[in-house]
Length: 77
Image 1 (cartoon, rainbow, N blue to C red):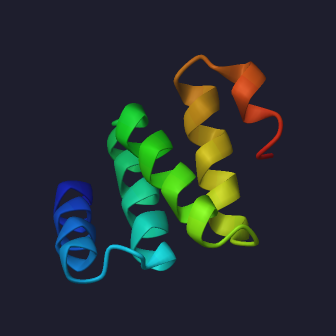
Image 2 (cartoon, one colour):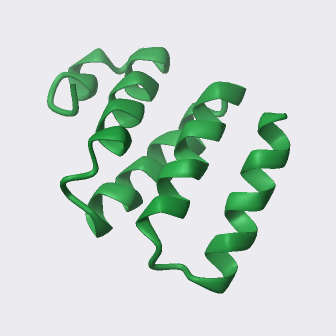
């Protein structure tokens, strides 16, 4: 399920690379799939485009925590 969600998010980003919701969706799907580097990269991009996106901040913080980078997780959470 999550690989499909990642593929759909990536396809959406090909059409509209500045869509923060697509970046946030990719971050969530990547994190749920255990691809924390991709989750972090996508989460950072989502926040860069939409700094008040609470879901992206939460996902990013979670992925930092899951990837043993708790010092990075504190600001997003």
